[in-house]
Image (cartoon, rainbow, N blue to C red; front, side, top):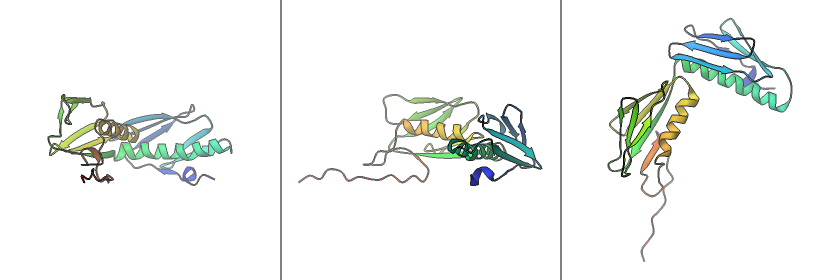
Length: 179
């Protein structure tokens, strides 16, 4: 029994969900449009402002796909109605960020600035040159963009310099002691 897979997904008033016979799911709302294809053993139906996901077999892998499919459809509905946000913080002397056209310009202590191309469905804003906000309808893309930016200079454990998620706790280490 998949507890998550059996729960129907509520559809807000301003969101349209279509599931075709091939298993293609398209969700459209004020924040954009998302498409995804259901796995072969999984079927979906739309009734009375609810999306129901059902499975065709009782194998372990299909049960796992049942819950996954329901969660992904729910994320699509939330994404096109409310959107997803990730926040990054930059810490370090002289470290800063700025949006220049379709690129994010990062100065992270290297000999050159880093130009990160912003994907077309993502909106990036920078506050105080050290706080980056990433917004978009697709949860996976928002998280991947945040991870890609963080990967340029992950926080180091001695001084805590680097790019970190907002609220992320960095485990600090003690430096060498001179005797």
